[in-house]
Length: 292
Length: 309
Image (cartoon, each protein chain N blue to C red):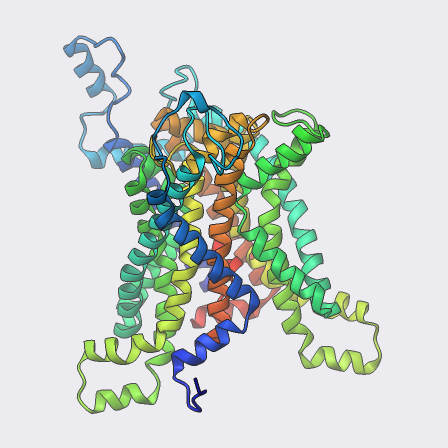
């Protein structure tokens, strides 16, 4: 393979990404976890709900890689299913944020004036409310479950995306090529989708990558409190909650699910940070600031 | 300045109104009402009670009534603990949560600032890298997982500290630590970026050229410019500590407001849920306003920047 002299934009970004050891580590970690969640359940002899009272609370062994819980269920498989739920919640929340946030932010930036003022005031008002204080009462009334969690996350999650997209588009729309497109008679939506949004892709991507760990964290938090998914389905948070009383004697029952929550969040944070550096979005907020 | 604060106050009042309205509507849409006991009441008595207490009134009238109640701090009665008023439970539980929150805050703010500023000023590669790695790692560990690890390590294995409950100062160490670590990583990271930025400014260069010692430059010049933006993040930080305390209090069996909040949600005790939600929102929005006022006083540039936006 010869190295081409002129690289495409995507190639340059990828190159800058692979230069960072931590970011590569995050991507590899994410890859392994995803493979585990997708393929391990079909290769294993156990199911996440299969009860075996002869094998209660067994410590990790070749038979049960992560041990078993108080009903003799194989923890390895349950953790794999838990990862699936976490990934689903994270990706679903990020996608909903993408749709609502981009439309809201784009509308504010492009219409400007009163519309902008009005839309962004709404964002400001909602943004001042701590997320969990809206989500928990909602879950209390809607009932717990993956779908209510995703819905509750979607109701408040798009605010950051809307703000960031608006700020980015405000900058881009003043540039010459937009005026040129307008001069050539391009329609409103053509300018939005062909000229403005492609230039904001990097920012949007990083914001999405940062949304995922926050969503995964929130799901784990709620499930840990007993407000998340219900038995026999296992999410990482609810498994950690079930394992808590056994902390003293069977610590693996809480350590494996908790460990995978940390690994998942860490992997996404590393990837997001790597992307941010590769895209040279220095002025965007670093990972930590977005957790609030 | 006045204009900016006025606008801010309006926004926060609207935020509070949103929460109150959502709380009211959720409470109304939840199944059951205060007069549905296990034994069914005779229909006439039930109807009369409901009418007497305004449950038959139009929603808008009920809403206005609810607002009036809130202003006079009347959050109603708990559905599960029949004798207790929601406000009394809040007044009982909140001091404990506040104490825990303050302890966590006093732990995380100075340590975080110290770590971040030191790493940025000394400019050692390994120090910077380990700070960044540690902050990404600790930000990825949810407080409840850290708390279990601490319990396992310090209470079960080493048996140095009590594993749970509330009483002496030693009971507060593990919960406060679990609450403080993530905000600490966040502050350290923020302090690091800001200090690194300030150290490149020409006023620092001038001070170095004059021959001032580094520690003096940091203390007299740099620190001020670093503290102001951190001050601006105090409000979300306090909100984070207070909401994070829900799960920590549950985990350590601490009889604070967060514990009651989680219990009330699990019990579907709607008046208590909504009472605590509204109380916490009011508190956090007030803190946000005060912090904004403080940072505007500390650095008037912020006001101009934000109003220009």
